[in-house]
Image (cartoon, rainbow, N blue to C red; front, top):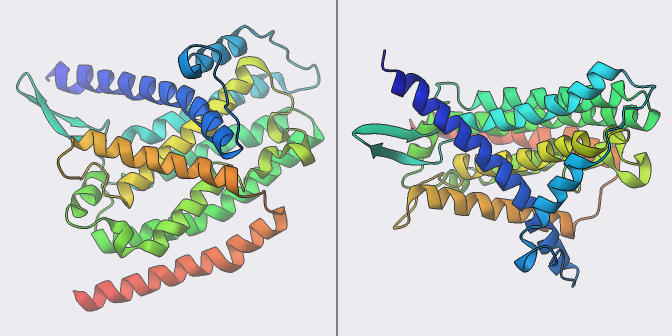
Length: 329
């Protein structure tokens, strides 16, 4: 057994992915504050370092050294464990996303992907779904009515939007004929799937907003109704872990959109990894743009929109896609 291929290289790739997501999360918070500030005609953070680039470090130090308080009325073990349950699946979901073309180092061909499994499209959905346990149990273990209501909203929201999201991805499988992420990227060498599946792209992106609890679907923690929802009783580093999970989920969803609909690392002239980074960054900007532009919807409207419009539309898109593919074959 070649331990370099089976142990060393996967370990290095896992460390790089984890560090990349943590650094990406930190500077995503800065980018969001700066971009939202520009939308609102103000400057945003600009005091900690040139252009405020040390602000994420200052925020991290503040969260780490803040006094740890565990309320007496909570279920202690679940209360402490839940931030980790929310955080870990967010990082694990990135494992199957191909970042660029394979590279050759010291005679060894190394894929820029942690694992190229044949059910790659199912993996991020399955793993990311586990993150809901962290939020739901966090709200329940807090023994607080506002936290519990935020947790219940999360459950309903995630279960509802999983269905149209899955239907939009099944349409991709019908078109490409594979569940493997690298296969889907290779299929888009000539034409990105957003051209063939524009409705599927819109459905997936809207569901991505809902699954990551981003505006206008940030109901699990809506502050004017639930104080802070499921994380009301959390502070310091435990709150920071929930915060990290939300932003890393946003990065993963943007990377999946880039991979599944925008051609992944495919692109002319520039290196493949740079194309992947550019496409992911564009989608992250759209996430922030939506937050700055749209007000929060009403909760019942959110559910009606999913069950009465988005899910039937996703089913219709899948039906039409299947018929067209059958005719063309």
